[in-house]
Image 1 (spheres, rainbow, N blue to C red):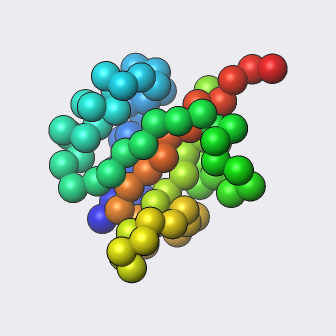
Image 2: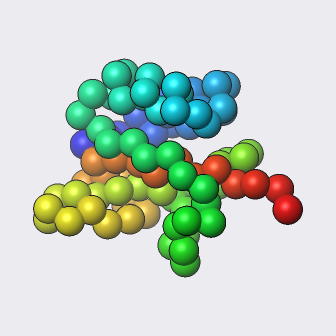
Length: 88
């Protein structure tokens, strides 16, 4: 499970390094038990992000019931979707 401190650390890393497959691979190594997905924010649909950041939005994933769902609750969060936001 992810803690608020873990989420803040991930946001800081992505803010410094930017979103890329290399950044995601590093996060997977650093936060071994957590799942990380990188996509475009346009791929998310109508879900509200847990946090909006410069250039990307953060969505939390809960996989407690064997099906992954987006959530805004830190409790039970087992992963994150980091969704790149493009300027239009």
